[in-house]
Length: 145
Image (cartoon, rainbow, N blue to C red; front, side):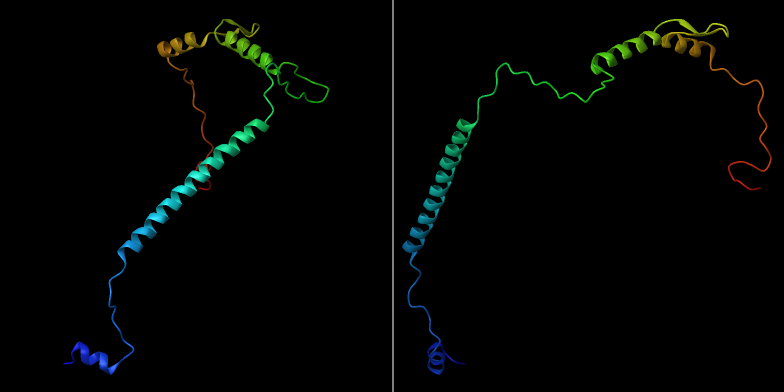
């Protein structure tokens, strides 16, 4: 086989490194890299705080007693106070659900409170039809027969 010295003689362009890498230069480079990164972070933080404070100073102070009035729709206005009207409507509906009253006096139809109606259904059960209506022949869920 060929030895190392003999291989160098055959190809003079191939060389080996005679010295190790400079450790002090690598450490200095890494130290400069870390210090540069810290400097950039500190500079950006200072810039952010300064610009935020500058923008805050430019803003006008908020009005202390100013009440924002919502825009009104064009005339004719059908509801002048929709929130109060809705509350009044819900109150009327709730009173109707919780009270007794006539629906049709001549036919003898009344309404009763929901709680009472649920109690009566629990005691008496639901009404059942007395006679079943016959289904027409040839019709149904399947369609044709």
